[in-house]
Length: 182
Image (cartoon, rainbow, N blue to C red; front, side, top):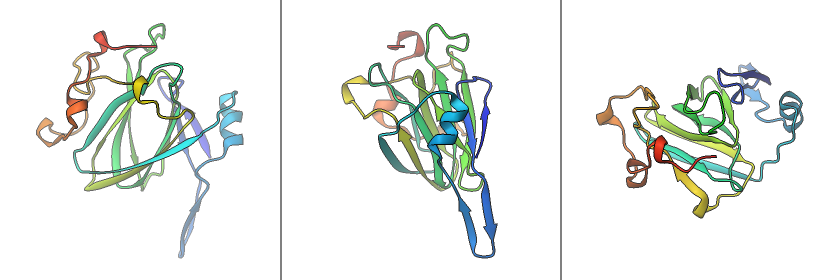
């Protein structure tokens, strides 16, 4: 597996090696020892989640407050999404900045999103199935969100706004300037 630090260096692009032949392919999608060696710290995933969504569904931008904040390792099993991570760490030089990257079943890329970031995605294909590991359990009272359409974030979701489908909760999330932060 190859690891690359993105423009916000705490965000890590993970690219597994693919061994393929006429029968199909094999890929090691997670190696804790290799990831920890690259990061220089331990990580212990305790929960794995899976979601299925249709074209235009936007989920996010979600996060949990400390002490229930989560590091996520996100990958797409089927379809394609634009995956977005926003830095919510008030003292960070990249506070309020985001990284958007396409994750798909074809490119097999994954992204490691550490604590202190909001996460969301929009489905670019007819449907998409995502799987992601987290290092802390879901805690409803600590769940928060940032408005996906907050102009201060300037996120290009790559779809026409009329094609974006969001839940009532996500349609009414706080702007970054009014959000509970780290």
